[in-house]
Image (cartoon, rainbow, N blue to C red; front, top):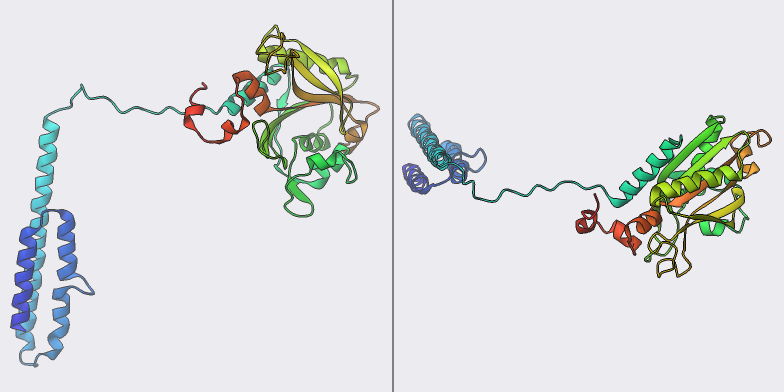
Length: 343
C-alpha cells in the first residue's frame, strides 16, 4: 500500500509541475480525483484489503494524499489564471491600433421578389385595394370546382398540381382566396392576394414548379370591362413608367367571362421591337376578365345585382421584366451576389 501511495504522489507531482493550461489542470483533476476512475479514489476502495489494525493508519495517509492533490491543483489553477489575467491586462494597456481595417458589416438586402411584391401591393393600396392572404394547402373545391373548373374540364389538366391526399393539394393559383373572401364578405370588395403557388411545370429559364402570383378582385354594382382596363392601365404606368402603353387580347379563363390577357409596350425597346419582346413591341404580363356568374354564385354573391373583375400576374415575370433578369432560376439559387444587386 505504501508503494502505491508513493507512486501516485510521484506521478501527480510530475503532472502538476508540467501543467500549463486550465484544460490540463482539469484533466489532472479527473485523473487523480475523478469519482469513477480517479487514482486517489480507487486507492480508497483498496482499504478493504488492509488488516483492521492498519486501516486507520492508511486511511489517514490516503486522506493526506487527497488533500495534497486538491491543494496543489487549486494553487496551480490560480497561478495560471493570474498569468492569463496579466497577459490580457498588458495587451489592453497597449491600446488599439486605429490603422487596422475594421470588420466589414454585412447589411441584409431584401430579395428582388420581395421588392417587386411590395411595390405592386403598394400601388394597388393607393388605388383603394386591401391586401388579403389565404392558405397554400387548399381543398379541391376551392382550387377548382368553386372557380368553374369541374373535374372533367379540359383546362384542369394544366392546373392539376401536388396532391397531399384525395381532397387536399398545394394550390395552383391564388384565385381560391377570392371564393374564401366572398363567402365572408359582401360587396363592395376590392382586394389583392399575393402568395406562393405550385404547378407541375418542368424547371427551365422561364418556368418553375413553385412561383409567386398576385391576384386581384373588385366587385360592386355596375362594374364593367372599362373599369378593369382603367385600373390595370393605371397600374402598368405606375409600375413601368408613364409612357407605358397597354393592350388587351381576347383569351379564355374558366373563372372569367369575357377574359383577356394584357400586354404592355416593351420596357426594353419602348415598343420598337427587340429580342425580349420577340420584335413585336409587346410583352404579356397578366390575365384578367369579368368574374364569371358561377364564381359569384359560389361566393354567395348575387350575380344579377353585382358584377366584378379579376386579374392575376406572376411576380417573377414582372421582376424579370423590371430588372432585366433572363433566368427565373436565379431567384431561388440563394446566391448573395445576386441578391446584393438590388436595394
